[in-house]
Image 1 (cartoon, rainbow, N blue to C red):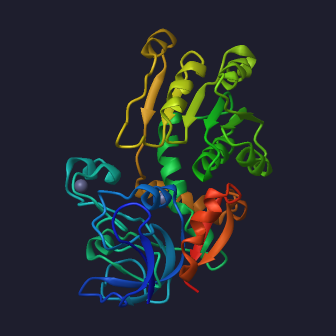
Image 2: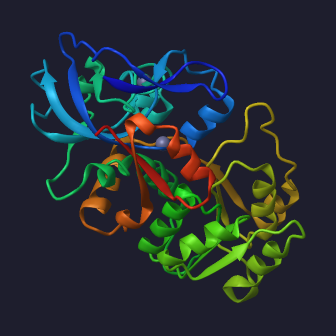
Amino acid sequence: MKAAVYLGGPQNIAVQDIPVPKTGKGEALLKIGACNICGVDLRTYKHGDAKIQPPRVLGHELSGTVVELEHGEAGVKVGDRIIMYVVIPCGTCVYCKKGRANLCETRSTMAYQHDGAFAEYMRVPKQALDNRQLIRIPEHISFEEAALSEPLGCVLNAHGRLNIGIKDTVVVIGAGPIGLLHGVVSKIEGANHVCLMDVSQKRLELAEQFGFHSYVPVSEQGNHIKTAQTLNDGLGPDVVIVACAAAQAQVDALEMAGKMARIEFFGGLPKSNPYANLNTNLIHYRELVLTGSFSSKIDDFTAALRLIVSGTLPSSKIITHRVALKDFLEAFEHIQSGRAIKVSIQPE
Ligand SMILES: [Zn+2]
Ligand SMILES: [Zn+2]
């Protein structure tokens, strides 16, 4: 079968012919329907990822059909169209017991410790089936739309702590797919005003179709901070979400936040320099609440699917490009051109 394989180090992903994975007792085989490109995949392509042992098939925003199943209690059957919650928790550590599988001490993840879904077929480990991590999807939902449950689940995990409601003015910094999902979810939650910011005018224009209340370019002179402070009758935003991997955006988020604002650092910074020069006095004097989030819990993942199935999420606007698996590397060209929002890889 064809698969996009990470071979270690920067710029080192290749489409190769590899054997269809063999499944053992308690495992399943999926025929991949679609696997969408994540920002993490682009980062791995550009810089490599020391956490991934090559060779490794990448791809974790996946959907497909169960074609082999040697497990009696997985909650799905052969022929079912499914999505998969890709974090495989141990189920017994203190975080798992608190329902926080994303923070599990010994979790493994598809496309990290197990081969992922930029391939025609993918093996599902027994532990994931024991945990019932394959979730059936309705017939009317396309594979590519269903696969949005993964990034959307991560966004919902963050929103679980932000408590956005009808009185809130929300600023999202970063107009990539994750930033757009944060903006859309804030609107669904009833936010009074959603303002989207980005350094790229092209990306802001692409985002206009989502109907946010305002679009503000990020400038080196800091005009976007002044603009944010005029929102909410001059009180500044109630919520600021940093949906990009830039230390300056984290600094700006604190500067623009209104008193008692909630601030979410959604993305991590590069591991080579994860420090930001934050004015922590702002946290003190304005009584800011600063939080982060990582990955998702399975209930976020299933909630995300419900938003897609009900049509609440405008999923067809988010997936802008489709690329055949054999042309995998073209996906990164689309993303880097600034014209794509989400690119879906399709095996056939
Ligand atoms: Zn992802
Ligand atoms: Zn655990």
